[in-house]
Amino acid sequence: MDANSDDDFVQNNRVHKLAESALKVSDRSKSVKPKKSQTKLGFHRLSKKKASLYCPVCSLSCVSVIELESHANQCCSQQEKIHEKSAEQNENELTICMDEDALKLLRRAGCSHFQNRFEELQLTSIKQLQSLDESFIVDFLGTGHLNEQKRLHNEIQSTIPNTSNQQTPPEIQLQSTKSISNSNKTTLWPISWKPKSSPPTNSSVIPSKSPLNPRNHASWKKVPATTFTVDSFNAQRGFCRQFFLSHFHYDHYIGLSSKSFTQGKIYCSQITAALLTQELRISPESIIVLPLNTEIDINDEGIPESTLASSSNLSIRTGLYHKRGATVTLLDANHCPGSVMFLFRVWSTNKTILHTGDCRYDSNVMQHQHLLLNALENSRLDYLFLDTTYCNEKYQFPKQRDVIDAVCHAAKSEAFNPKTVFIAGSYTIGKERVFLELARELKLKIHVSRQKYNILKCLDLDDEIMNFIDYRKPLESKLWIVPMKDVSFKSMNRILETSRGRFSNAIGIRPTGWTWTNKKEILMRTSRGNCVIYNIPYSEHSSFSELQEFVRFCNPIQLIPTVGSASSHEAMRNLLLSYQNPIQNHRNQKSHR
Image (cartoon, rainbow, N blue to C red):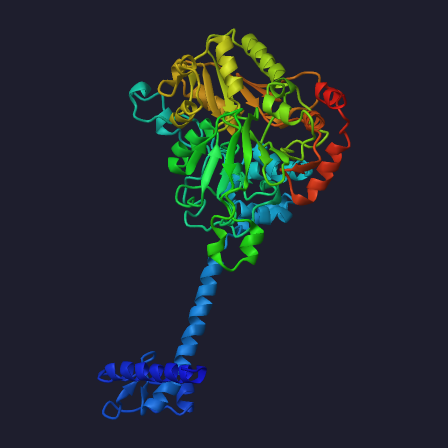
């Protein structure tokens, strides 16, 4: 059968089907009045007796099959246009756009040019912006935008409603006759919270059916010469089968959920794996736990993008790339529990790549990274993907150990009153070293929420430590762990007011990197009434001087910043590489022999 006969067959078949459909409705008791435009085209309004054929689309009566066919073709074309327009509208509705109130906030802060980046992370409402803390804003905007960081933070804080006149929630009304230890309620925070690391739980905040953002993986999240990605789940998938997750912070696992992830395997540490299964309900079958400081060979089972774009035969893409892959080593990132750096040695290029995720450089920690030292023994690092959160000369803060010692010393001086309660800020995970050291030094029992308690159980803490942590009886604990934004005079006063006289003084500890003002004193003390707040420069990201030292230590051929906008990466790279002077250490000395 030639092409013309095919067309005739399709046309005749269509007329036959239309005629059949018309005959099926020919016995309808009511006829439909045609539109004026249809009457002008030559269609007739017939009586019930004369009408024998009806259009199956609009039920218009027709005299003959030929007239029916002509009219029905026009109806079908109109219906197709309507469906196309409706589908286009539905597609537009699925596009996640920032609402008007959130846009106004960005404009007031002078940050409207970041709108696309907020929409990429599905941060599109005032409620979502209010959930962001200072560290997330620094991570998100990058340190090349200091003024925008401050303005955005101030604008967000100004939209948070005043809760001082709100009625105390039932679970913290300690004046009631019902004992708090017998209460079924376990959430005892003065103010509800959602830190940056917690997954979204309110469907009204982030639509549960929102599609993944139709964009490619960012270049700084791809491992060169492989299909591997690091901390990239909010992008189109298809060619990648191995996803590496450095730690359990929301801005790194965003886009990952139990319903949407079926594309491959997630490689991470034991602690991160426990948090994924408990908090996000990720199937254990989708997770592969890698041990620290151990070289593991991982085959690259993904499809190279070049092959994906050029090859039209899907069958040839399977089984050709079994020799591609890399030897992967997990290294301690010194960031939060479970955080790791990934050291890749790619087989096809024999290049060495270090992806830091989020990290805090410490020379003492780095000296124990023997596999990294071995990799740098006789050659330079080919690629360094570096956490550049504080890549600005203004960000200088003390060593973590010095800060913790200063906090413990200050806390001992404040603990003269037996009715003193300490309020320490934390994230979903992060800042644990501060309050654990404080509890150990002052021998304090720790009170946390039930959710925080379950998270701490995933962190592989010693049983001796877990025995001092409780979520049931807050009045029996003198160290409370609260969200970072609740270390404020307002919320601390509420704790004192609802404690039935158990506590008379409150000491707040607010550990965040950008409180540092480069003064001689490590801690900044502020008091108001019976409340004191210590802003402490404890950061889990590298300071600017530590970034310089890290770059000199690795001496990379290529440096790729992983924080901030792509337009600011070149300035960061130039700033850090300008300080890159060879270190005359044992490694270099041996290579020159």
